[in-house]
Amino acid sequence: MLIRIVRMTFEEGSVDAFLTIFEASKHKIRSFPGCQHLELLRDLDQPNVYLTYSYWESAEALEAYRHSELFRTTWAATKVLFGGKPVAYSVERVEF
Image 1 (tube, helix red, strand yellow):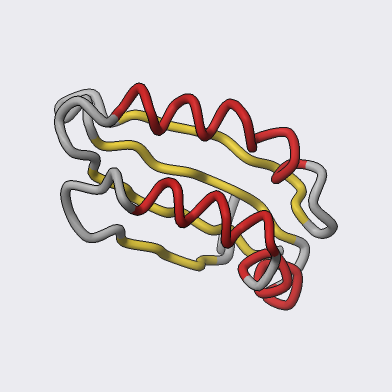
Image 2 (tube, helix red, strand yellow):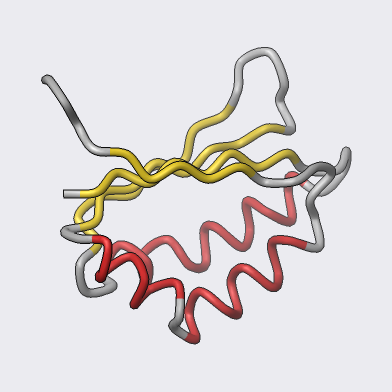
C-alpha cells in the first residue's frame, strides 16, 4: 500500500472554490480503481493550507489515477487557486 500526502497552500479567498472542487470530485476519486481511502485535512495554524491524505493499493494505481482525465480536470481547476507550490509525498507505513 502507498500513502500519498499532498500539501496545498491556497490564495486568500480561493479556499471556498477549492472546497467546491473537492466536494464535486471526492466520490469519483474514492471510487477510482486502486484508491482505498481519501481524506481532506486543514492546517490549524494556516487556514488556507489543506492536505489530501490517500491510500493507494500500489504505485501503479496512483500513476493510473494521475494520468486519468479525472485527475487532469480536477488538478487543472485546483492549481490555479494555489498561493504556493504544492508538496507531495509518497510514503509507506513502517509501523502501526
